[in-house]
Image: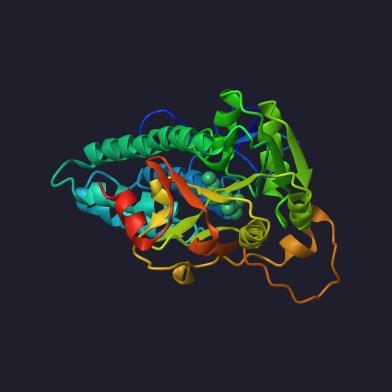
Length: 355
Ligand code: MRU
């Protein structure tokens, strides 16, 4: 792993051919340092996902797809050995984080492609897998822009204040984001959006990443602590809440960063529309409701001594779920690259995603 000032600020970039490597912005260093890491081996990709150097559901999926290309590099020229290695590599990458379904979606897509390639040579399979990882990357870019267009149309001209949680921006995707794409597009269309940014305890993705992205684009933004959202709504400062998602069940229940569920309840109480913006790769139609979404539990140190400063007594008992599930009935609409699901039901989700 090496670190340097990036020549470009793409969240993820692949450099070279099948022997190349993945370059990631190390998001744990933002906003004070904008540095990249070079992922030359599988363990570095796994560690980058686990430690949130690359994070956000779509970005995790893209990183994992490139991770497969890196992981099978030394498997030799026998097709069978390569496929065996591919299975091991995808199983290993799947252990990095449990909640964002985009990770498993991208790994399955890579695996299915390779398994379906009949008797092509090992080197042809490697090239096709790199092509597939690049396609996953490019498709995400396009999906994010489409989400922005559909979402911005929902914000009428009376909307001025919007609120978001965690980071569902360019840093969480190939480019442009999901929830933030809605604000970026609205801003580009000349709508007056002012974004209230939840800081997002405990890892502060809102404060460190979303505030940074909005400031980079000169979009008016105000940072608040998570616990201030109710007061901000009571003061009529926000007319819409938009967040991303890590996994959406067949009935529209949506997992996202811890704190999203309570925001949805607050929005409901204050009659503020609550939108989820996510690409179709974030849906998991194999589960009927959000009850089946695995919720990642992270280390207690993230709460007791986040960013190196102890803020709780030694030995205190801690519970640290990284995500929560917002029931579909609290979600006004789900915005995808295909359009808007409103009202949300199992049938509406299925129809929306039908090819
Ligand atoms: O733990 P993180 O930072 O990976 O959590 C990210 C989120 O919860 C995002 O809102 C979600 O992945 C959507 S990103 C477009």
